[in-house]
Image 1 (cartoon, rainbow, N blue to C red):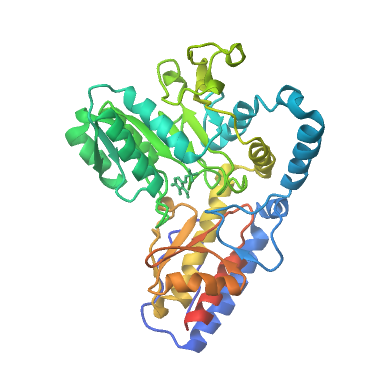
Image 2: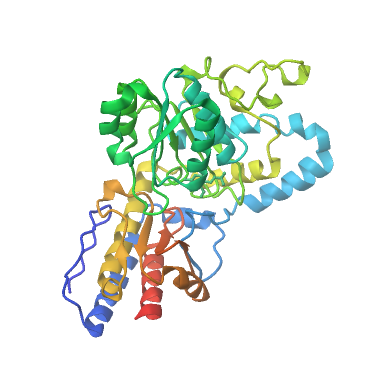
Length: 424
Ligand SMILES: Cc1ncc(COP(=O)(O)O)c(C=O)c1O
């Protein structure tokens, strides 16, 4: 069997005839050489040293919780001992704690393709989703439909239902690929169009500019959940004229467990949007302790309550892993990894009942590859015993996330070999 690997490619299935074990071993040996070449040619290889990866571990779960960045321990130590231990209350201003949600928002903005003044960090994705969805729906009074994804992540689905209940709206669930057609038909009734950039189960990348255009054509506003895209690819929020977006920071941004989420609101909405969570941090003059709420100007009104400062400072340090990284190069490296992984799966796992559930067309996948297998749930802990970490989604999906800042083609092949050893 001939192995062809073209980075950033369309990974096409290889021969359908069942190869012998010896054939597959020979193919895997060739793939090992290809992996070594691709890793040697990787322009981003230098960023792996920005992470503290446990020795001999193949970590393919950065789409759930990113690896610890090397800059984080010292920053957290400093925040605990110097800022908190010595500075105490004065650190709110002397160490820049108070401004951190806006300062770190500005650090995330380029990763979103957002100009300054549109991103703030704090609270969880769920809280940001609720706050933003309510504010978005209020911008289109009289329209009764929230259009969203039937396969959205559960927190998005639950909160959409909750917002619909509170505002007396109706939820329509159609896949993102069908949203433009539905909007052309019933768009005049739709207030908010709310989708994930990448499907959390299959890793499919949705057409953010296309769906946004269709929403605007119908007079609706859009809200994107960027959890599975931010830090893995360039995202052109301003260029696509997106209205709102939220996303977590503990996946590809590697901010740490529970690191706070971000919220993006396009500048053009900031004077009119009304967030329902009118916490004191978003007040125009928070330390005046006034009786009535008056929103701050700009994106600062998206602030809510006191943020988890240690997590926020951990995130800030983690973001230094992106210093100097060209996002187009990052995307190319990510597609090379996922394309190569699919190629390895085709060569070594297809005959063992594994099916690639992620689109093979490069432009339609995020940075994870989902494999369907009837034993997916059982395989995850068995892989972990072989030092390969990935995760599962019931009933039959195994998710392998690739962070091009630290994963290698060798990791991809090692995971495939481990799966073959377990199932073959
Ligand atoms: C698409 C998506 N949205 C939201 C969340 C989680 O939200 P929270 O940060 O509030 O737990 C996840 C978590 O994996 C997710 O994948």
